[in-house]
Image (cartoon, rainbow, N blue to C red):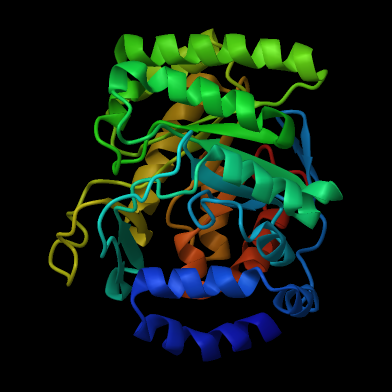
Length: 353
């Protein structure tokens, strides 16, 4: 494929740069209309429509949040051929994130460690970028908007940030993802447990219902969770999802585990580990969620997808959609078509060729 050849040529240059600098360069290129036109020439995955959360996805392979936190390159990302584009995480107010360096490649493990810390320009700038995109203006496809809390908001007031962002982004989103699982905002994962989760989901669900009435349109709510949970924690989250009628769950975010990479350069850096080392842990959470949820709530599988077979494995574990991020860094945009083709030829439950 032409996109694979181009990426093979570009990758040595990108990997010679600091990881965050390469990320910023790539996003800058994706903003350019000329680059978007070239990307569209490569062709997109064959149609494989799936209906999840009441939304029609052209195929099941989407972009995970984190690559474009501000929604500044939506049109360029859409030109790559994703079945859905998820942007963010956005917070109410702009924040710089954690000190640099804060992103590290681990090529031997096909992994990335990041401690970005929800660096973004705030929800007002985020909405402006969404509105300016042709993807949004022309309703070209599925757009997920991922929301979080500011680092300096006390964890006891976290719900205020989520409710504020939900109210701001609601009418622009195909679905809204609630990110309570990043390891890079202090105490954020505390929201995944106990009464904190029940309280947050109840407030968000009430707000969603009010907003649906206000805008005459129901926008699904999705919860993004971490891979670093035991069976009891997963059962609690599943029960909360069912109780509060949350529309979907993304499994999973990055891991704080380091066993697979501790011996590698940068392996001891703090932050969230993504890529191949999180694949098995993510699949374990997907299988456990599927056991608890059945078909009541759809699962979006993320974590360590670097081949079409990896995407098939996520579907086999119980996911109905998958998302990519770190795999794109190591494999390039050809991975999107490879994963879509692999899922299209699957015969797992929930996959409809």
